[in-house]
Length: 113
Image (cartoon, rainbow, N blue to C red; front, side, top):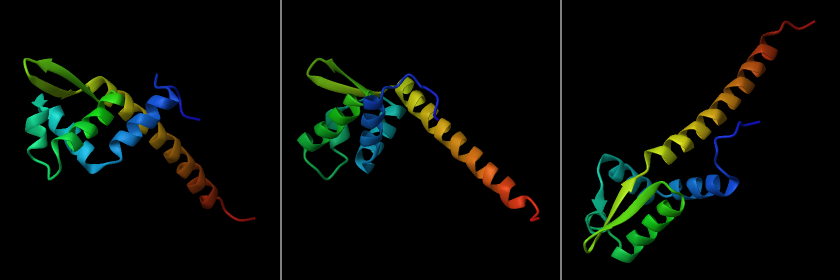
């Protein structure tokens, strides 16, 4: 069983859904480097501004990014705390599977009677 990370099942579902798309992962990576306007983010994708806004909304719903207004611009930055919580969850899954593989290796290494 995976230990609690402080994330509800709904939060976990939103995080995995948000990370399931390459564009959203790229937006997350870019906003980890520095806060960026939605316009600056949208300029680098071959999709409409509205489509980029929708991707950002999914990331925001997963709490992976924070959006704020500065004048007429909307700025987006990654939320390192939520990313760390998601990383901790994945580390727990990795530990679980490594333990299972270790047990299987031990069983296979036992001599036959």
